Amino acid sequence: MSINANRLVNITPRVISGGSADLETNGLILTANALISADSPAMEVKSAQETGLFFGYESAEYNAAVQYFSGVTNQRKSIKTLYFGRDLTAAGSGWIRGGKSPTLASLQAVTNGGFDVEISGTVQNVTALDLSGASSFSDVATLITAGLTGAAVTYNSNLKVFVITVTATGATSTIGYGSAPSSGTDLSDLLGLTEAGGAVLSQGNAALTIAENMDKITTVTRNFVGFTTLTEATDDNAKDYAAWADIDDDYCYFHWSTNTNLLSKTTNQNSLPVQLQTYNTAAVIYGTVYDAVFMLAVGASIDWTGTNALKTWFAKNASGLNAKILSDTEAEALESIRCNYVGQFATRNANFILLNRGCLTGEMYGFIDTLYGAIWLRARLQRGLMDCFAKNDRIPYNPGGYNIIAAFMQDAINQAKENGVIDIDLELSEGQKAQILAEIGEDISVELMTRGYWYKIETPTAEERARRESPDMVFYYTYAGSVQQIEFPLTTVI
Image (cartoon, rainbow, N blue to C red; front, top):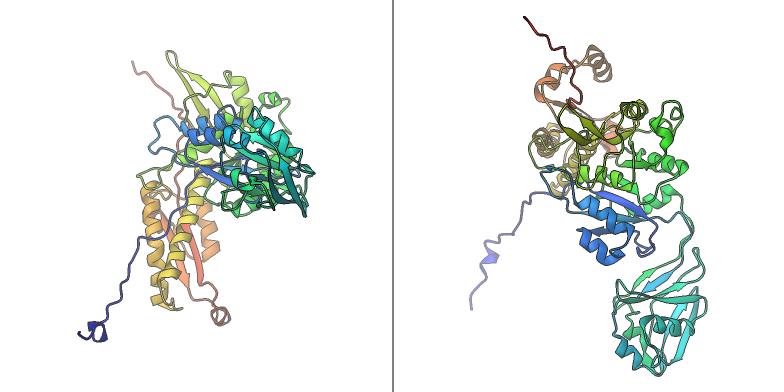
């Protein structure tokens, strides 16, 4: 026996980690498919195959996922994640989906089965079910339905499970987990209707506004930037999606339209793309859902850890995309209202199918790459500063504390300079210089041009310090955009 050396030398293990995870600029597709639980109205898939296994290989969700995961021609990074969000803007029914896949033979062996389940506040005792005569899973579903009131049972042949759906819709359309009956074979166990058996619940919902719907989705995940709809949104709904995305400039709504009125300057002057120009974070593409999903894929394929990784949406294409625009007249009409399109461009001996112009409806950011870069940098700085709080015992209101803050911002700045979000050597206009001078009281144009960024951290008022509020901080950075058109005279000297 000996005395533990910890009495004299006690070394506490610690880890200085690399920090928390970065934002991924994944895409999200809104669908009304009730396979997604209203209780958790967003789900993640990692491949088109996973999408097909859940929704079915004939589903619209699968076809959209095929386009999304096919990525972008010559992409540096393969796309890893897609989200589907449940559209809850219509009242929905409650349901329970079984967590087990029983064989037909095991069900046919039941001659006196049952289970208890609470539906819309009332416990129902399903008893004396004889499934021996069932010749299919659909027959089993019909026999169980006969024992219920105000609900129906179906068999999902894709997931190979039974689903009980309440007939009524709305917030009172509720259902609970199944439990064993007082006697007979326990079908709640055989069908996996218990929590332990892996059952999934979805309570009924009243119709939500689009803002309420999107807020509920973001309680499940915020790890996406671009989103679109599986079916073409109405003009009113499109405005609501754009308004929600515009609240904090944190998301980008990609609206797709098949409206041929957009193709003529005589019929498009008060069209939806024009009406959306009051919003900063919306983009419109003339085409189908696959064109919009392709635009989500461009953002999802950005490798934020790479060199000069930020890319324009302009001039990108993907497998499976067909040109929708073939004439100069239609191209000019769409460009006049800041509407994107996939067009076929031709030189004398070559054809190019690509997206033009990669723009937003609003002029504040102007182009999608500018917005995505700003969203990524804001999230990256936020992540660094959250790590700053988590890893430091205290950050005082003095130069030492401000140096700590600056140190945790620097990784984001360095990464932004590497991946192309921050550019150097951008010459500011006199108007830009004057605006910055008016805002902060000093000329920082030289530093912005040489470093690509400038920030200031200063002590707030005594009252603000007493309330532990933020130091006075500002941050400016330069982004040099991208050349998307080339014109010049070609002069022959003879």
